[in-house]
Image 1 (tube, rainbow, N blue to C red):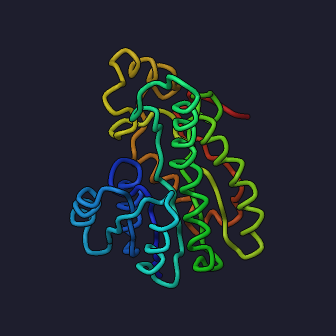
Image 2: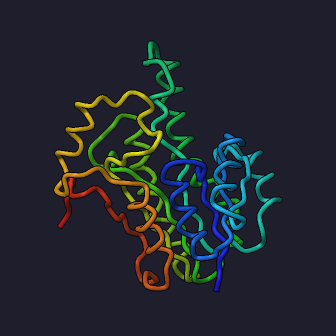
Length: 241
C-alpha cells in the first residue's frame, strides 16, 4: 500500500535523502522549500513520484496556498526545513539585530514545523506519522539555533499526546554532524570537521541517508508504539542511557 508523504526542506541534504527513501517505496512524495529551481531539479532526479511545491513553510500565506496543492490525505509529514540561520546573517550589533537573529532561527526551525502541521492536521489519518528533524545542538547548546531545536523537542511532546489517541505518532530524529549538506555553508574548517568526527564513537561523519533511514523506520508499521521520542543519530557523540 503506497502512501502520500510531505517533506519540507526536501530539495537538498537530509530532506532530499528522506524524499528519495519514500520514493523508492513507490510512495507519492511532495517536497517543499523556497528555491523553486532546486526543488524542481530534485523532483526530476528522483522520478515521477516526487512533486515540487515552492513554499516558505514559516509563512502562513504560503501555507494556505500549499493546502490547495496537496491531496486530501497526507500519511507522513517530515519536517526537514530549518537550519542555523545565523550562518546567513552578520553577527548582531544591537538589540534589534539580536532579536531578528533569534526570531529567524525560531521561524525556520520551530514555527515552520508548528504551522505546517496545523495546516495539514486534518489530513493525517490513523496510522500516520509526523517526524521532525531536531539536532544534537538542542542538548549541547548553540545559541538561538540550539534553543529553537530544544523548543521543537518540547513541542513534540505535546504533539504526540494530541495525536496519539487518533493513532498518529510524532517523533524527533536528532542528528549529530552530517556531511554532504548545506548546513555549515562554507564556515566549517577542516580542523572543525576532524574534531566533530573524532568526537563520535563510530569515527565517521553521519550521512543524509543515515537520517533518512531513521525517519523511514519511524514512519513504518514497526514503529507504531514509538511516539513522543527523540531518536539520536549522532554516532555516539552524545550518549544516553
